[in-house]
Length: 455
Image (cartoon, rainbow, N blue to C red; front, top):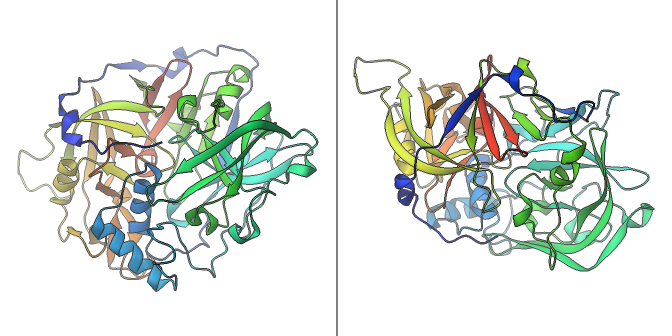
């Protein structure tokens, strides 16, 4: 989907969102005996990626079809050179990794309770979970992404030269696969590349919940940024149906098709730093957060989990007696909740204010974003969403090593908060979800937030 570059400053006039606090015990199942399941994550500490900080930022620009800023583009091209990849051949490809990295090992076991193992690549670039497709079921590792609405996969139709060890959806081996004639899909990216292919209907099972005749988009062409990611066989989009790219008739997402079979018409994200987190479908686990849930309305008109935020405050790590710190600063902005984006991308004013409280932090054009000393004393950032205050602890702001490829030996690190400059909205990505339990309420078109018991 193509976006015009709109100034985030225009969102300053946005009205404060209505926030409703709800005790979780008051949220009742709408279908007793319906399906519910947990997708447990496993942190993969074997995979290494050079230059992952600026590449994570570049990936966000690419995803939303926004041209990379010239300085970031130059940084990414230099990273490609370091990896032995000719940037003139692979122009503006932020997702490349070294050819000797073939992704992560994974398990695809599903126990009787429906719990599914999920594997994020190291540094939480993406989270993968096993999905069963076809009859008999074929297990593929997919990225669960609330910022898109396509279920597309590497398949037996994907050219050999565009494969790099991914598990394929073997269409001829599924007795229930059926071609959706005259339908195709195509996703265009900001780097000028795209992924595209044919559309099939087949059985898809996640956590024991089966959807029959689910649209599966088979890749006959895959952009290089996906080809190099051997651990992932594709994406399972959890956005709204309106931004599905199948033509001429858009297709429903897995969550849309599975909704009626769930005990509750919602799912939740509970991501964590360097340890197992999870997604839950069809129920709310009250042990994963504290206090009431604060719900805010979602504007789904553009296909995203979009909401309004009102400003921020910063609690200094080392209070100096300055009475203005910790005070609310109004910076209204439109945001989307996107599990498929690693970083927390905020209006430039918020980003600059945050790093102003971090000694040694600076915006480095030669690195492609904000960097800081890895041992810096980091303040907590509170994002105000109406009356709800979402605290993002300072310990989450160290995202990636800069001067080495190992966080344990690095002295300079890439910040988990970066500027959303040039983007039509702020993106609350995985840095946010590691701090805030988040409910994606499909039935009621709302997002629910609550603090976690501990990080």
